Each structure stands twice: as structure tokens, then as C-alpha cells.
Image (tube, rainbow, N blue to C red; front, top):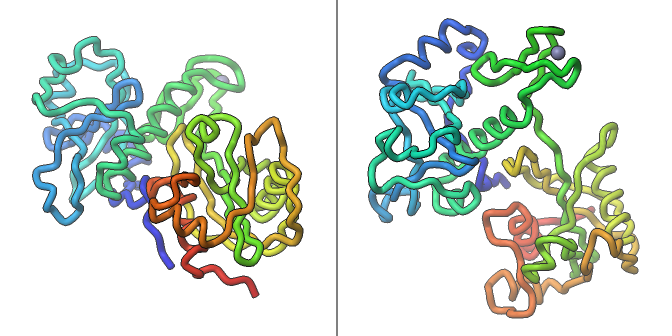
Length: 317
Ligand SMILES: [Zn+2]
């Protein structure tokens, strides 16, 4: 089964050939037809979609600016080349330095900067994918201004897909951090947890998750995280789907796993609660009819891992 998660589905051509040619990038940057997506303090510019009856049924759309609007604002930051669509270059640009972006960029009245997570819930999948690429790229440039080898200031090259150090010549590439997220089942029960931070505050239960270590496979990370957080042993691990999560640059790798032990021994530092829930309890909660069990919404891959298990789509031999 194929899923297009929120933050996936970006349909721009990532224009690898153009990225390698600085002259082409400069020509596209200055071209009157090029389009720019501004982000301010990592919030993205949106406006209402023309009609809710459109094919995507999205309430918002991305608000692209013309090359003329961006050039007039005299922004010092190098834009990031996202890609092309029908030969039109699309860039993301960090406009945080502008005190009054509405005036400086000549924004229309119905445009506003929206938190990327909230915006993604109201955009088409394609546009949420563009938001993921833009937010992760801009955030990476903000955090990697200096060379991690020699400490000198680095410069953006290849349309923002590398930062190069003029002193030691090191090249630094945008990073993606893999996270394993897994729904573990024991027959007709599944293991859900509440992390000690955000989930405990919201009262929500979700699939367990954790960053994959260096030198560790996805399957090993699933088994280790479940062992650490819940004390439960896992045998079979099956890949389900993945989701870019641009806060700041994770790739959620969704898996199902079969438990071979059931006694829970929770990590009390990381977790506020870990429990087994029956398929019936989870099914009722997914339908919004169980007030006691709150689960993540469809924006999160966890929702789809849970829903596909409840639907009986996941079988272990
Ligand atoms: Zn250096």
C-alpha cells in the first residue's frame, strides 16, 4: 500500500543539473518569471485557497512572490533553489531580516505568515512537501553559518544544497536525521506510549519513536528503542512508509513490529506512560468516540501506522 503523508508529495523537479551550474542558478535567480516562497522566522507565507470545492479541498495555498517583489526588498540572504516546474525556477527565501515584510515585499492583504505545522494541515500534500523542503533548508542554513572543521564563515553554493568553506575547502551538506517510529503488536493489542514532554502535556498516546544511532540498522533501532522505552522484546520488524518531518529535518521511518515479550518495564525518564491497548479501544479512539484515549491526527505518520494495524493490514508470518 502506498501512502502520501503530509510533508511528502512535493512535485517540483529538484533540478539537479541546474544545481551544479552556478551561472544557470544566477540566471534563474534574476529571471522575471522565477517564483519565491518567503519564510519569516520559519513561518511560511500563505493565503486562502480560491475555492474549498477545488480538487484538493485545501483551505490555504502557498503565497509565491515574483522576482520583482523579492529584488525590491534587497534581502541579504541567498535564496535556496527548491526546483523547477514547467521551466519556472522556484526558490525559498528567508525574509526574517525584514522588520516590515508586508511593506518591503508589497504583500497582498490576504497573505500572512503561518507556522509550518498548522499550515501543512490546510495545504495540499504537494504544497506541504514544498513547505518541508523549504523549512528544513532554511533552518539548516541558519544553523550552519560556520565551518565545523576550522570555524570560518561558510558560503551557500549549488542553490543552497551545499555550504563551502573558503578557508579549508570543506563542503557541508544539508542533513536529514532518521527517526524510527514503530507500532508494536502482540496479537490483538498494540503498544502505545506517552513521552514525558509534549505528549504528556496533551494527554495523547502514540507509537514509540527514537533517533536511529550511527552504525545501526532501522530494525536494530526499532528493537533497541522499544526495549529501552518499554522493556518489551520485538522480533519481526516490517517497514510501512516514511514521512519527512521538517522540525528541523527528520525523516520518520514507520515500521510495525511483533512483540515476543509483553511485560512492560518503562523508562521513567523519557516516558510518562506506556501501555497495551486493545484493537477495539484503539479503533474507537481513531473514530473519535473514546474520550479517554487521544491519538495523533492524520498529519502524523503514527496515525497511519495505528490505522493500518487496526484495519488488519499488517500480518506477520
Ligand atoms: Zn573550514
